[in-house]
Image (cartoon, rainbow, N blue to C red; front, top):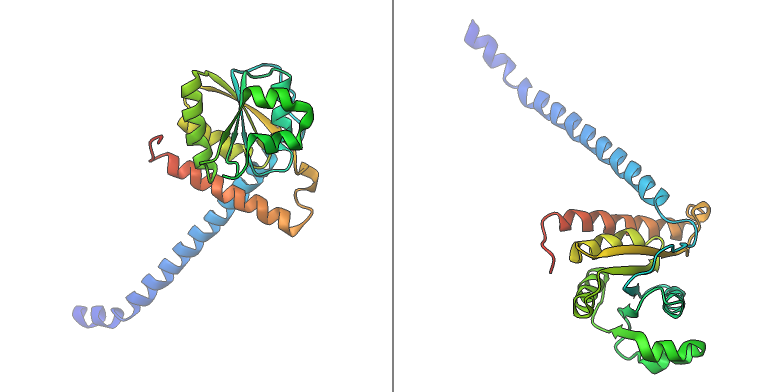
Length: 211
C-alpha cells in the first residue's frame, strides 16, 4: 500500500515545484522593482539643485563636454584663477583653440595661455582616463570637476576610480532644477538612462582595475 500511495502523489510534485518557483520569481521581481524605484529616487534627490559655490581652489580644472554651458562655466572658473589650467575633455577632433576663442572672445588671453584640449575621449570612461593622464603629467593633486548636475555622480565615480589619490571638487552646472525633473517624459527618460549608466558603472568598477 505504501508504494501505491507514493506513486499516486508523484504526478502532483512537478506542479507544486512549478508553483513554488513561480512565487519565488515573482517575489524576486517585486524586490528588484522596489530596489530600482528606491535607488532611482535616491539618485534624483542627490542631484545638485543649485549652482555650486566654491570655497576652495584647486590645482586644475576639468570640464566634460556635452552640455551647452559647461565650457563657459569652466573657462570663467579658470579666469577667476580657481585652478592653474583647464582641460576640456571630449571635444570634437576638428575643434581648435581658435574656435573656442571665437565663441568666448573676452577670455582670449586665458584660453591661449592655460587651456588644453582632449580630443580622444568618446564617453565618460574616456574622459576619466584622459583626465588621469593630464593630471599625472601636470603633477596636480586636486581638480575641480565641471559637468551637468545629472551627469556629476557618474563623472565623479569614474574620475575617483582613475584618480584615487586626487582630491575631486564637483562644480555642477544646473541644467535641470529638481522641481522640474518630473515635469516631462523626455526628462524622466534622460534621468533614468543616466541612473542605469551610473549603477552599471558602479558594478563594473567593483571588478575592473583603473586603466
